[in-house]
Image 1 (cartoon, helix red, strand yellow):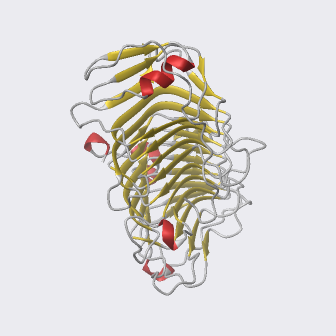
Image 2 (cartoon, rainbow, N blue to C red; image 1 turned 60 degrees about the horizontal axis):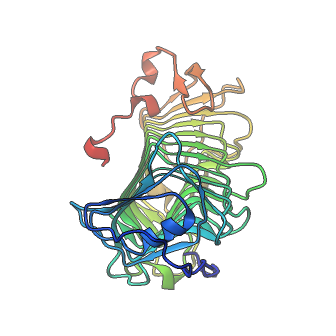
Length: 397
């Protein structure tokens, strides 16, 4: 949670239980309306699957201490993936999972919540994070619309997977992580919308480490499509305060269009950004920043930017924005391809010399700026560059 963030105002579960049988472990519970859903969520055990029929349900649900197991997770999902149920109204957040483990959300839609779309946290027990959480094929729309209100908020979550999700229209970040670790964001789609303030697409801060963001699409995601780090109040760091906001983050195989900057390294260490296709950023290609004055935090350092395909125009005044108290000399730029779509022949001005960079080769993009954006040029100098050349690791990590 960002410093100064307002507490969540969730609708209490005060409705009487509907006449549903108790759900033994391994059983499916089918629900058709909000009352049945609330009753089912009160009786979650390892192996329970709650299936929501197509339709509209109220949100405002809080699950606390719900624990599945690795072999028998708790699952809450739409019964028909082609017609995902919609959670709308009923509270300021659709679902709040607090101190839960081995729980999967799938084939759901969430729309129009003022605080956060979905909030997942460790319940304030920093030493014991929420574990084994999966959010898959979930759509989150119209969160906020302005201010510190995130589509998916995660604080103190470890061993997580966010996959095949679509988030559009938010106030703060599409996904905001504080003190999260050992997780993957995969094959998601993030699209900013008119009327929503959209500070970031994916933000990882507050001690977040060992996270992979890959194979996703970012369109007009505000100031920073991916924010590697940030500025977090010390009391919110998880599991403890170190000397970084984010560490060992990998951003790969993504497609970016717009945003003031595609990527920002902010009080970050040892992050790697590679094999992405970046199309027409609004002001900078990337930023290297230090957004805290506390001496305990070491300078933003040791980032790697390599094998990316960058298409820019006159909107980019400075390729790499470097702020005070950073260590840009420790960054490495390798084998990136740079194309000036404005036709002026401009080449990138980087804080350190690039190794084996390529400039001035037109990638001949198909679907420029779109989710299927790809280079059609057969020029051998572009081989191995951009999202098309990304080879994902086995099992997503």
